[in-house]
Image 1 (cartoon, one colour):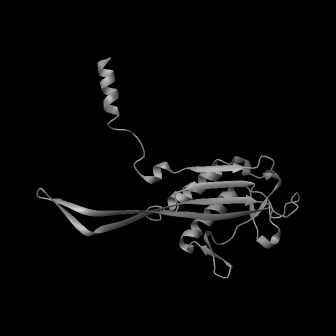
Image 2: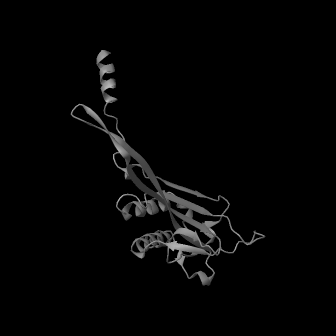
Image 3: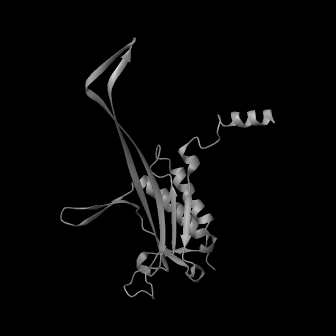
Length: 197
């Protein structure tokens, strides 16, 4: 019994858990149960990915897009997954059954700290003015939304999202696209109801 308790106590010194941020990546998907995905077959996808929306002084809205070097592999992954589920890509002007809109959201957190004292050789000293340190980290998520571009049951011609997928890992670390690409694949893998007839 004592050995068991001792082993349990030592195990608390070496907890198992995530060592890297990608170890805690998660993918969330949800859909409208009443939406008939099997009755659809065509989709449209923009050729750019929005990462920010800025409102100018005159009130105009300006979209900020992801760099093509990062956006194109993500768009290709969406196309590959949609194709494997039986969907056919068409131009947005050719009356697609659904529109897939991807976007990236990022958040930068800043830390401010300062030092005003030092210790050396048994003596305390003071800085004046204090020495300020600023550090930050950026995290982000990749979002995909599917919607019917021409809903029949909407009085204001707006459609609720038929499918939403969110994966974290974008804009984090050294811009490793593998995390976002993995999130895209996982989002489709856990949404088998998207398969067309």
